[in-house]
Amino acid sequence: MSDTGIITTITNIITTTTDTTTTTTTTTIIPDALLLDTGDHAWMLASTALVLMMTPALAIFYAGLVHRKNVLSQLFLSFLCMGVIFVQWVLFGFSFAFGDPVSVGFGSFSDAALRFNGSRHDPFYCPTLPLLTYAAYQGTFAIVPPAKSNVPKVLNQPFT
Image (cartoon, rainbow, N blue to C red; front, side):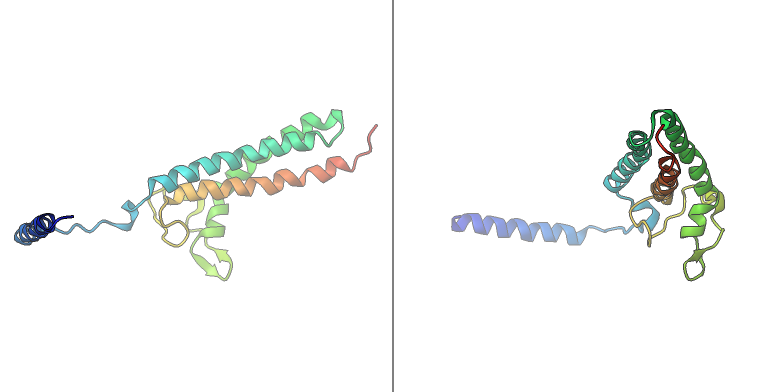
């Protein structure tokens, strides 16, 4: 870079700083609830869908382990778990697991039935996500263990 280029650059910087000092700036305070990351939100929704698909995939996997007459039963039990457990999670599970602490390890029922309507922002559990998205994500993981628990009952039956 030549000397004239450096002088021109320094002149531009000086004029730029002169221009910015004469203008007035207004500061807008943005609440934490509006500082949501759309990329995190999109990935969490995609992850929720993938985990939700894991339950029928487990049903199909375990259907291969059981006798032919138990395949439909295995699929039905997994889909039944998807409905029942998610309703329980919405009604009281999320509030009990992630609500305001009553004592160590136990939450309150202040958010039972997801009373916060997605408007509450929790900087501890999900700083860049809506709490409702986090509740749906955790709810999909609540479905998997009961769906897996019905398999040993079917596998103990003798093959005929």
